[in-house]
Amino acid sequence: MRAVVFDRFGGPEVLHLGEVPEPEAGTGQVRVRVEAVGLNAFDGKIRSGAMEAAFRTPLPAVPGTEVAGVVDQVGANAAGVAIGDRVTGWTSRGAAELAVLKLWAPVPDDLDAAQAAALPVVGEAARRALRILDLKPGETLLVHGASGGVGGLATQLAVAAGVRVIGTAAPVNQERVASYGATPTTYGEGLVGRVRALAPAVDAVLDAAGGGVLPDSIELRGGTDRVLTLTDPAAHGLGVVFDERPAPSAEDLADLVGLVVRGEVAVPVAKVLPLAEAARGQALVDGGHAGGKVVLVP
Image (tube, rainbow, N blue to C red; front, side, top):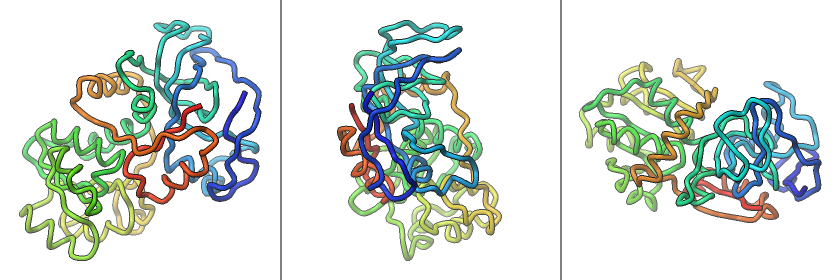
């Protein structure tokens, strides 16, 4: 089958189309004919070799951790799913014509495949972050990167829970942040003053963007308590919680799919590209300013 492959570690340019053996669904798994695959910053870290100290990636490798597709093979003990069902979920080799899913949720016919494929990773991260911060209605949350995938979804979920959100984003994305029900502001020099002009106190901070925002976040919060980053390893030297350990849940994913279908939250898809343009797509993601999710389609 056709797949995106990298034979060596490096930049996005090492990604290319190749032929690889078809995967088979194992116990408790399903195989799907891929309709769309979401690209993530984590895929870039694996491809660059930055994750080799944590775990080895045998080469050649196929990237991609989230897909949407139509089930064409059901493994033993995979309950509640049948051939022909549309699903979205987590995989380890998703940028291909076929992929095996370990956890998944049903996708209704009225949800676009690109939107469905864009949901598992950002949905899990946003839910995990909000649970760690344990926000209460009426509290104020500062979200860095509120127009992006994780930050945007966390912003919408927090607003829906009665939390006031101040969201940082580039000038071009201020309207998007406002459309999520948050109060937008720009990042960069003068951030502390801008946020304090909007809110007398910040009860929690979520950094979904990185870029050196943690010192300002600590100042605004008045300490490191309830300051969380999903992106910046500098947290270790500052006493801030750095959490990048996914804990996928099929139940959570199914709930998020329902929210998207009902129009209660949105996951912006910035680009939909063919598999052959995987290098271009991953370069957009690696740059951190894609303006939403980047999705590949076979």
